[in-house]
Length: 161
Image (cartoon, rainbow, N blue to C red; front, side):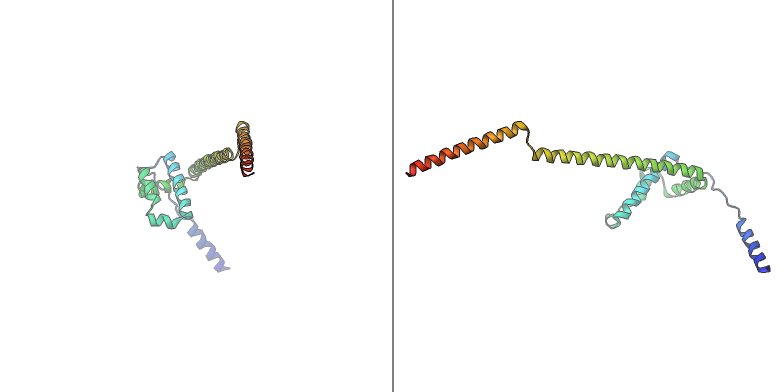
C-alpha cells in the first residue's frame, strides 16, 4: 500500500507542472496570412507525398518558396504557429478557415475538370456527327458519285462491245 501511495504522490507532483503560454511574438503573422500560408503548405505536402522523387530531382523546396512568397522566415512562422496553437479556439478557427479554403479550391478544380470534359466531349461529338444539312449534302454527293459511276461503267461497257 505504501508503494501505491508513493506512486500516486509522484504522479501528482509531476502533473502539477507550470505550462507557460508562449508570448505573442513581435512579428506575429496575421491570421489571414497564416491561413493562406498553412493552406499552401498543406497542398505542398500533399504534392510532395504524391511525387517526392521528381521534386527532389528538381530541387523544389516548397516551404522556403512559400516563406519567401509571404515574406515570412521559418523562425517567425514557428513562433507564430506556436502562439496560435497555444490558444485552441483560435487555432481551431484557423483550421476551419483552412478547411473551407481547401474545399473551395477542390470545388473550383472539380468544376474546371467537368467543364473541360464537357468541352472535350462536345468537340468529339462535333467531329463525329453531322448536321442534317451536312448529311443531306453527303447523301447528294454519294448519289451523284454513284450516278457518275454508273455512267462511266455504262460508257466503258458500251466501248468494249
